[in-house]
Image (cartoon, one colour):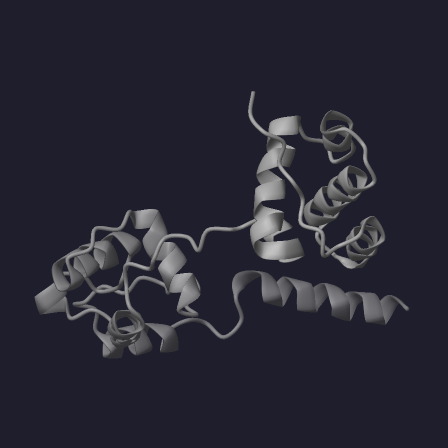
Length: 187
């Protein structure tokens, strides 16, 4: 049978309860209250039950408390995965999006996520899924905007000439004007 684990003696039960009351971390507070119960002489099974854990888990927290003190009873969160694009490359991607595509070089007239996915793969050698490209664009401050499509061979002069040929009053406007005039005469 393993030997009993002793708890450090520089904190009294009242100190542990005071720390439990002051902390904003609920898990740390539960662990501190369990340790205060142990200091008061409660058996470890009942003290563990106070904190909502089993006896072995309480023993693990006692080890951390003995080594690190009350701060050792906080949850340790992993830092996460390192970013695959550095800040410089993110700035370069933002410049690419801002400049827009070159029709001859890129083969497109506007950027889509699938096109930017290909560009990132070619330039940086990183293969992101199409959906994550949208996340990167949002992180860079871009939002989804879809301009009205314009054919590359479209002539602006022809469009302006067509606009000038439209009648001044569309078909329904003259009828509405006549009704209003009639109504004003009746009143």
